[in-house]
Length: 304
Image 1 (cartoon, rainbow, N blue to C red):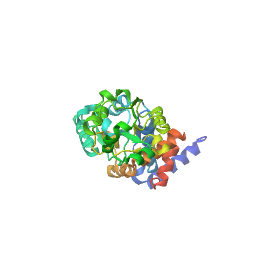
Image 2: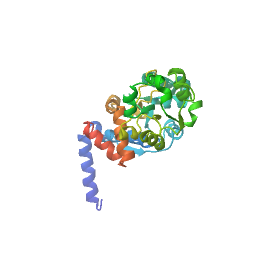
Image 3: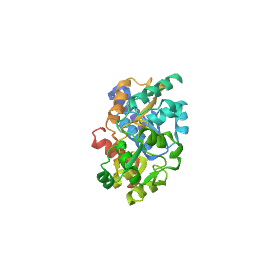
Image 4: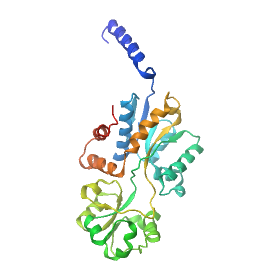
């Protein structure tokens, strides 16, 4: 850019490049946001990189804060796309509609968003999810033959329970344990520990408790080889992840179907095990979300 000749040459090159680029290189910039925690930022980074690799200019606005900050930003058009956990996203608007069925949660969330003016579309969701999980050590699972939550009732008094302080008043905790699974409240042996936190995972690993409430993709599950018990009565909300995209962005695309397919292809490969493994890389090994996203996308043939 130091001389007028350079400017002229640059302009000529841009014309040639534009002529050789499908759609004339006119794909609109997409602003991608996320919640404040690492897994949301990681999913947003995965979306960003696969779109960039396919010619979509991306502006990142990651780790905006909680859903109370991020969702209004999406509704107001400050961002165009964000990853959402279907159960919690639905609960943000109407907790009474939450279920253990991700397809039902998606439909209910879309209906609510349609009722707010139809400004946002819920795309395809992941088979994997990050939801409330009751877990045990592998030795405990082997000793008592534990594979699903229904197995706990027969041995409940022999187990030391690690549960959050709010469990007593939480329908997804005490309500689920007592009503669906026949666990008497309070359990005979109970330690009150915050769910989804390092201390409760350490207590489980060290044998201070035998069953604990964690988050299903918590890195400690993979780190310590915990067994996640199947919620066979479907008491917990389905928290599969889906991109939320503003319709005014989608309307700018010359090939909306191609855009949606890129994101749907990514979502199809995100299992709970993948979320957990990637979480270990970010939260335990302290790798950056960008590096972890690139490695996973490359390994799965999703980057050009």
